[in-house]
Image 1 (cartoon, rainbow, N blue to C red):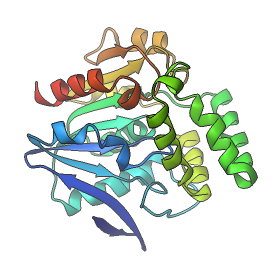
Image 2 (image 1 turned 90 degrees about the vertical axis):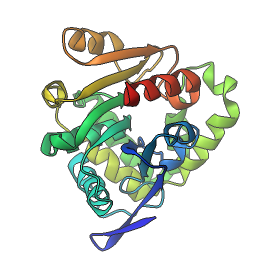
Image 3 (image 1 turned 60 degrees about the vertical axis):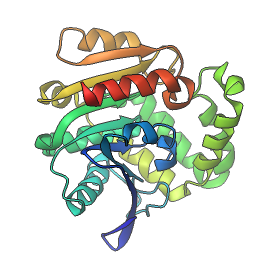
Image 4 (image 1 turned 180 degrees about the vertical axis):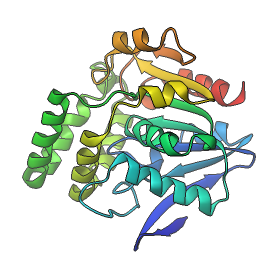
Length: 258
């Protein structure tokens, strides 16, 4: 389905009936990442998966896609579908977008799951890495994506899930250079939203991968262990929907239905 938005279009998919679950994919992903989780979740719920700005079949609207801008696009779809409250599951960048939405529209949230994601802002080192990657993207996009994508998986997962890895990589390579750069610039700008998450009056869950090289697991556990935020540690890396598919499905279903 397509929603007209700011002289552009937002692509999304709706399956099932019942209380709404909003699925927000990560950087260099699209709604296809949810295909193995949607059938079970849609048995009792309305599942809305949205291609974020510059990803999948959703167009770019500029050269910087802030998390706030992406959240506004998500809100446009929810308003179009007359969804007033929902559970949100955000993978990586999708979690950043969900937090940006929660800051301004907390009443929308029945629950928020940060899946392989963080409430932290980029540190200076991460911002520098993103800036360098954007420069490289202008001339060596395919090589850049091939190189960086491997880091999302635990080392052994690249072999164990070779078919799924290659399929996800192929989808990543279909992201436009503009979409890549705009999202990176937007992620550099995002603030720390721990207080937004902590103060959100709904169910809250963080799913962490023990071998995730992008997230400091110990730091996150220490930060949330005395709060109302629940967390789960899975055995593998950043791509839990591939590397820990069955466990993830169980925990997500439990999160939205308990």
